[in-house]
Image (cartoon, rainbow, N blue to C red; front, side):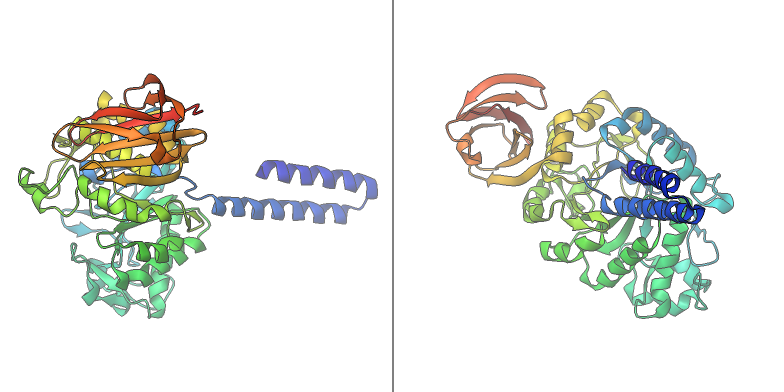
Length: 480
């Protein structure tokens, strides 16, 4: 569209020059043509950021803070070849890219830069060589950053880029990140507070960053000023950068409504690992960890009214966190991608289905270098991706009408999709009436989405056996 508009204007101007004559008028119109085209291009770029839930890969679940350049390059090669065509486009390096062996690396202006041990191509160019490589594969490049300012740069009292102030002028020790004490808060009432965040985004833009995940930020109302400040910094740069907020452990729908205009995705749960519940028979890790898959069924329905609402330079999406599938690590471990997800196969189908019907961002967390066929098929089921990317009227139809059964609905075009979730520890037989989705008495062609099998016409209802912690997803078409 941009090229068509620009070309049409330029052709018209050339014709007018020939008819009317006058080189001055000609060049003035040509200049106006390019200015208009540039402004129109900028407007389009701003308008479409995150038009659908972002999809991609993030390093944390499988590499924690130990990802290196060699592994990352192998992973993005795999993504480009096997997942990009499905929609997985963001390749994100999570925490730890800026430190090695207890040392943080900075540029002397309070801004952290890549560890040369982990990312040897960085040198004086930061992540630009890696971002350029990611872009050459058709992908987009993302990084994890923390709210606030690093303790090492504060102790060294480094300069704040573009100002006469230094790190100690804006650091707020009382606002340390509760779970990572290497980060002080930023005094947003100080004139260098906004300048500091502006300088970060200037640096990330120069590297070619397309996505920033800002952590220790959301779910704590006292940091709303930081959320807004980073959002303003993102708006100031020329490059479209998707802005993600984390962790969201205390997020509420009212708080999400307040901040969604400043971001593109925002976590509404604590970190999700491969834990179904905190029950007595769960692992010690799962019993002690704050977030579980079963808990998401009580959280997501409260946020459906915020799905796809206007956000920063585009749209915004409530985020259920990364997908802990395939080969993973575990917090506190010094091993990378050494164990298979603890979710059963049924629970993995449930995870992908719930994230699809809720339209959460789909960010794979497992190691793509070790991905197996089952996990690949989970990530690439066409109907599940269509539900996640293109559905409307997403809603939980009923909860516990049958004990521990939840039913979700979503529409994609003329097709209606139904998900029957079994949260119970026993297999359940479920009878679902089309009356509950306003198709009373209708006969519909039914397809089992995960089995990829056509079940033929069903009149008025369907019956299904749902495995423990499992799901059955059906597509209904040609209803009459």
